[in-house]
Image 1: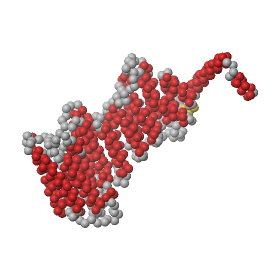
Image 2 (image 1 turned 90 degrees about the vertical axis):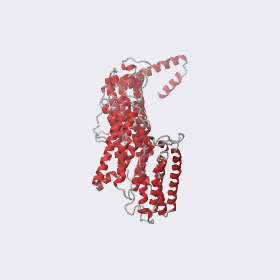
Image 3 (image 1 turned 45 degrees about the vertical axis):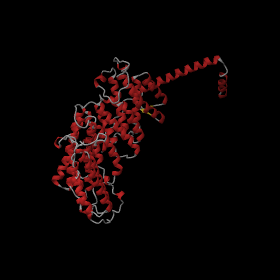
Image 4 (image 1 turned 120 degrees about the vertical axis):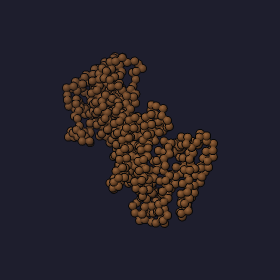
Length: 575
């Protein structure tokens, strides 16, 4: 019989035109058979509540119904299958997720997916194509409203949507259920997946869907919490995960822009608290691996706090006040516990963060005078520079001992950054000159057991205090600290070199450095000091010549850099 069948096939190939007609009839029969099978699958889908095997063929029919025919039933089937795909890793016995929350059982049909190709195709369809259908049914021709051709375009990712306009759509009640299912499934997927590439793909794809969260505030808050967790995650510090942090931050920023007020305030609060909690683990041993992440997170928060200065001012005021309260407690009680709350990496990183935020408001808000609008709001942020400066100076005065010299140098850097960006005079010279009064500088260096490291081993940016036993007694520690002091002194001179009062400003500096040159026996330190003195004298001569040509009296001068030539950058740009 098999041989006869093969012969029949060969014979059919030799029948000419009659055979072509038979081929066409066979094709039509095959199409009819496929349509019958599809109808049977849909009927089975409707009547059967158990798992449905999702095949490539069935997925293709769903795709055509949802995206070609713009069918709501087809879209529901796609989202239902996507929901099952997001819960593939859930076992029947696991009813609790990673955060301890109960997992809701899927309502409606469940799908079984045993092909990786079908799974990948389904994820791509749901994450990259469904937003076009949401737009079609809410704003496009399927919304039941009058739509002009120019308006029938995709939603701008960074513009908010009006919830009242969305509610007017003809199929809003059905689309709302589909949106809820889609976002809940996606959030569950984000909480379970650990692969950076998949996390990056999902977060990147959600940029098209974030504006549709406007009428769903509860889901928006959950999405913000998930993105904040991914952005500040401590479980993965690899370079590959940095792209996940970036995409998570972009979604956080997009939420702050697109969601109705006061959602931006929720965003500001959650991002700062996540940063503060992450900085808590910035000990000296882990700082080398944690510092790049904290730097990135700090830059992200600076970006968020520049979106709405009016809201940012309220939060910055509260959190800077918290730092001031911790400092006041330490100054009053002087106990180990209270001092430890201030002299720790978490406190220092928070000071760095607010210094960067206020500096950004100076560079982005128009600098000097306020002309209204955005610049008026930025002026509010700039008003916090004075209290922050007082806090930093208070931290310096809390324990002015030799051991905490690195921390004081950290604070000087922050003060110089504020002075440069705000173009203000903030005195830090006395803090630097006090270092030359430390008696350890004039004692002979000695070898301390366990501290025989080179200069490269004493990395001041990564430490807050020197060892408790004999601080600043090794040549390596002394060299590192004095090099940093002279660097900051030179930066101080460069900041105020065009001020009319520069010669008087450098009088004390030159006097103290000359005394240091006479007292020290180290040739390198004498060279550092002499170079700084020569710099002071050269700048002072230039200012003395420039002051003779000024038409203003000293009391009438309001600009700090009144003698700066037009071709030279400002102190903000030089810093």
